Image: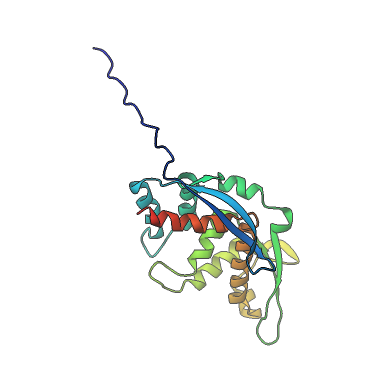
Length: 207
């Protein structure tokens, strides 16, 4: 029996609905606007794929996986420039890999903490995990995870911070806030944070 003919794929309109934008990012200039810009192209991933990506905002048990959501937006929505977390992580400069911060602790103490950049996927998740899907305050869980994985002793960069450190010195909530600001600064150094935000908005417009 003769083989069935393979269906032909119509490529005539491929990419016809792509959206081309110029996204501004970076420090604000004298004109009050971000001083840098990047040309980007977004593509409608299809209705089913868009819903699957959107579903990562709630994966059950009051949890979300915005890091994986971002990874899929990188793969299916952002056509140009192409992003992967592996490449983005490799591009982080030595200067941006860690940051020392001074905190306003309790009883007049000013503890110093070293913050380690955890990689783009983890940084995106940390930035969203402080509030659960149902709005619950997840500050304690987030601080405990950051203390184990991200915060380090300044005089011993391999030594994690423990909860006793925060009990003795205070400043844990401020450290968490400064970590999230630092993560965003690193992720937006070349505009990724701004591009991801715009791509997420575009994805919603595809539904």
